[in-house]
Length: 253
Image 1 (spheres, rainbow, N blue to C red):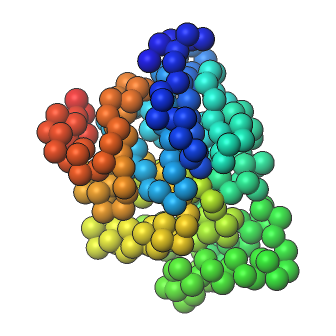
Image 2: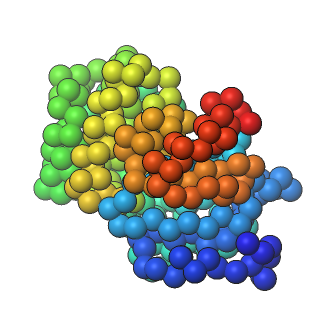
C-alpha cells in the first residue's frame, strides 16, 4: 500500500461489507500508531484481530467505535461514512464496544449496570424491558445476582455483565477487546459459546484476542497486526499454520 493521498485501495475492499476500513492512519499526537490499515468485515462475520502487545489492535477498535478520531483514511458502516463520528452517535447506529479489562461500573449493582446501558441508548418502557430480557436470557446466571455490586462478582461474571450491557444496546457491530483476559479456561469456554450465539443471531463481531486458540474457536477470519500494520489477513486455519506469527503472538516478536 502507498502512503498518503497516493495509497491505493485494495481491490477486495470494493466488495460490499458491513464494515470497511480503508488506508486508515491514527496517531497520538506525534506518535503514529496505525499505518494504512485496510480491512472489510462482512455482515454476520466474526473477525479476529491478533498481534503482539502494542501492535495497535485496541487502538484500531477505539477508532472504529468513535472513541478516537482517525488522522487519515476512511471508515464506512453499511456503506455510510462514519469516519470521525463520535461514540455516542455510533452506539445508536449499532456500533458497540466492550473494552478490555472489567468493563463494568463496579459500585453499581448488576441491574443498575444494565439500566445505565439501556438508558444511554435512549431505551424506555417496553423496548427497555425487551432488551433486558434478551440480555439476561443470554446470561441467565446473572439473574441470581442482579442486586449485587458488579465489583463483588468473579472476573468471568463481570465479563458476562459487560457483554450483557452490550446486548442492551442491540449491536449490529460488536467490538470486543480481550475477551479472555485474565480468566480461567473453563470460564472462557462459556464466554466463547455466548459470542458464538450472538454471531448466530446475526451480530457482526470484531474480536481482539491474544489467544490463537480462542480466535480459532470463534472467528472465521483473522488479521495479524504488527507495529500498526497488517501483516496477514486470511482464514484462521491458515493463520494457525504460520509458525512465525504464532511465535510473535506468544513471545512478542
